[in-house]
Amino acid sequence: MKRSELTEFAVEEEGFKLKIRRGSNGLPIVTSGRSSNPPFGGAETAIPFAAPAPSGVSAAPAAPTAAQEEEGVAFIKSPMVGTFYRSPSPESKPFVDPGAKVVENTVVCIIEAMKIMNEIQSEAKGTIIETLVENGQPVEYGQRLFKIKVG
Amino acid sequence: MIQKILIANRGEIALRIVRACRELGIKTLAVYSEADVQSLHVQLADEAICIGGPKSADSYLRADRIISAAEIADVDAIHPGYGFLSENAKFAEQCESCNIKFIGPKSKSIKMMGDKSVAKDTVKKAGVPTVPGSDGPVENESEAVKIARKVGYPVIIKAVAGGGGRGMRIAHNDISFAKEYHVARNEAEKAFGNGAVYIEKYIEKPRHIEFQILADSHGKVLHLGERDCSVQRRHQKLIEESPSPFLTPDLRKKMGKSAIRAASAAEYENAGTIEFLVDAKGNYYFIEMNTRIQVEHPVTEEVTGIDLIKQQIRVANGEKLGFDQGDIKFEKHAIECRINAEDPARNFAPSPGTIGLYYAPGGHGVRVDSHVYSGYVIPPHYDSMIGKLIAYGSNRKTALERMYRALSEYLIRGIKTTIPLHKAIMSDPVFIEGKATTAYMEEFMSRTPPDLFS
Image (cartoon, rainbow over all chains, first blue to last red; front, side):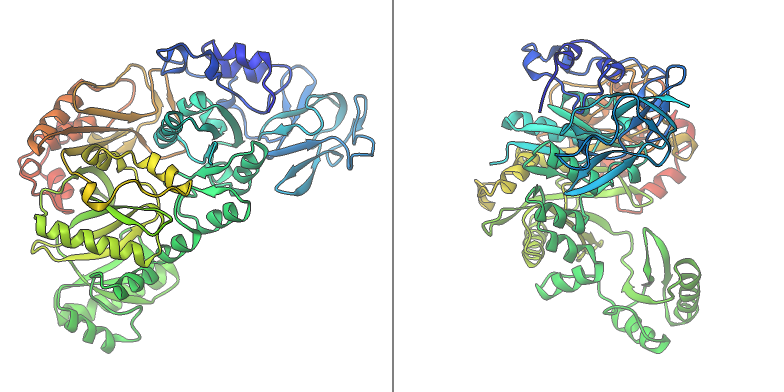
């Protein structure tokens, strides 16, 4: 599993979950860095958290895929836990590249879960701006896969 | 060698498992719902994967997503905790077929003990006393009356498809039986679509006394003593203690042997609990086996000094239990109060919301197993238990006084809790004298003014 520096750094702060969620690449694993743990537990033991901000994940609507954030921009989110593949097979071209136009039932990627290759549909109409995860990367439920421009 | 464990649960038990793993040097993976992002165990685990939306059916009960998470994170074992998928034989089977160790019994033991009549049959054959009654549903009224007379009144007529206290009628003699039998069948048909009923002896004001079992995969089956869980409300336990103030050393020995026999008949491995009902005369009857670690396991841990979660992991690792029955000492008396986010003054209405100030008690002989903290938002999607307070001492009197002291120090502001209720029970003469049976809570509530709980 890869750990980015952002994760390690964020753990030192209170409310780091919110920072992870707002990061530019949704990391599949939210880690709490044991290595940064002071001898008496420090930041990792029960420190009072503020209640999550209204835009926090726990208040997020249930829509598993496209969600509106910036004006006209939405995200295609993972509806399952598994491994992300951007192409139908290792040799083929990706399902979508930045600039590709998609409609609701356009297949944008495959998520492999328990040996089953699940085709994931866009569920939104628009243009792909960016692919946010890497080929072969493990993804969690709700993780942002693609940034799209709606319309 | 288990090196990484996925914790398929939430709240205080998930935290408990994280703690045991840390002490054993085992890496932890927390799977969580979107409602549990701020949960303490998610913060403390080495890794965390979101597996779904707030509803349990969309997250903690999603076996597919949990196994998927286990695979992508390359875990060796899954600890299911209690509730959720812990007694789901199919889930245990899926783990087995994916080569992930399920920290608990074999799936076939879960299946066997999950069916109440198969369980009863299995332990009966092993010589364990069960509640006398019909062997399965009764065909007609004359057969039913015969059984009622054989078993002896009072009897309880239970719907085969019922459960949780529903679909039961009690009859005290032949005359009332004729009426109750028909009422029971009609009600069952209406409520469950299945009018089949069976007959059992009605045990009046029983005590609920259960035995903790620990078994390894090398054939050793031990019991770690009993827990008296008679203080219940609507079949939900509120207070558990060990040893039971009712059991004599002789009865304890007999029941312990029966518990081991029952677990052996189920070919049991890992931790489990055998539940008995005990009447005023000391007759005891097997009612069911819980094939998982239980909420009230800390009571047994404080009495025996044995860490049950660590033992579960060791057994799952294929290790032999490092002690025998004779090595287990019962040196303390321990009591647990379940702290729920409910208002006892308003009929236990749930009280979710934000905890303002949280200060947990401490000191000699006090243990708090809780995942909450100041500022924590209790999600409304799950059960209302926010923690367990355990007090122990060298005798029952000390444990009770200590519990009262600890309850008095426990500050949880911003929500209603059952702390005032527990304080009232700790001061109640009936409970202090060790006389509580499963009829206790109803009787206690009826003579206690509600404003005593605010």
